[in-house]
Figure 1 (spheres, rainbow, N blue to C red):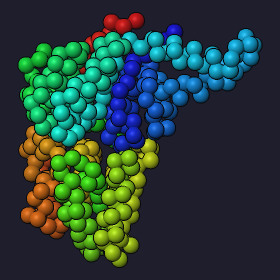
Figure 2 (figure 1 turned 45 degrees about the vertical axis):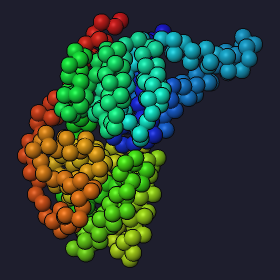
Figure 3 (figure 1 turned 90 degrees about the vertical axis):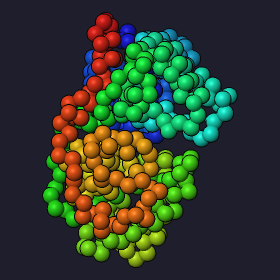
Figure 4 (figure 1 turned 120 degrees about the vertical axis):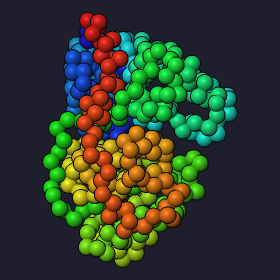
Length: 371
């Protein structure tokens, strides 16, 4: 029976995370990937080399009914046996995602230990490779040192920002590469001069430590969209992840806009990655709150400006010597007109595109010896 790579990721139908998982599975087509978690995005399951327990149950169901009837076994016995075989044939694990090492709130030491117990359980199926992430935000030294001990046990850890890499570079298994989504191939060709301005929205009301900025942030986005309508263009408010409240935040912003909301469009990501990428490619400008909205704007060579709620955005743009961002705590210092008229100040991301696949290097070396 084939061997399987175990995958841990955020499967809540978030565009950025879905793109990373899709890149992983396509990068190693000779291997099969399995996750115990429910995959909510049916488009990820189109790749025959990837599935969750539900996917494989459905795959074996028809054959299983026939075999169970023939052998007079209890219904479902064959399918259950096949799932156990798959689970028993996992030989290594991949933990992939962007914000997978965050301290979500002022955790006590007992809560941090519980968090570490979960992460250490990822080591149960052979070597663990963590890739694509930044470290933090973190609020205590105990959280950081606990993860340092965890990283020592990993076969490889690859960060997407230099700040995270510098924090743990004393460990021999730590690497740095630009965000994995920079390695996207077959970039969609967008329509030119559509007059559509993409606005990626995030729900700050659920973000620990910055929820106090939710109201002023939504007010600012509302004013930006009203300005865009006023100059004869169309804001397209885009949700990257319904589960994280993007759609709810968009509804609140449109309510604040009053009659100006009639001049807007919305795009809610439904798991269709190709369609979402095309939607971004077809816009003339991106007002980005989501990290991967910034990455995709860079990749698609769009004019953009980032409303930064997290240091991961600041760190990446600082590494690129860009000033096209403003912290959500400083929005009173800028105006919609000022943002929209800014020119792109990043001329070349060739090295980022070339080096982004480096996240796969440690896993790739290991897989060379797997038969």
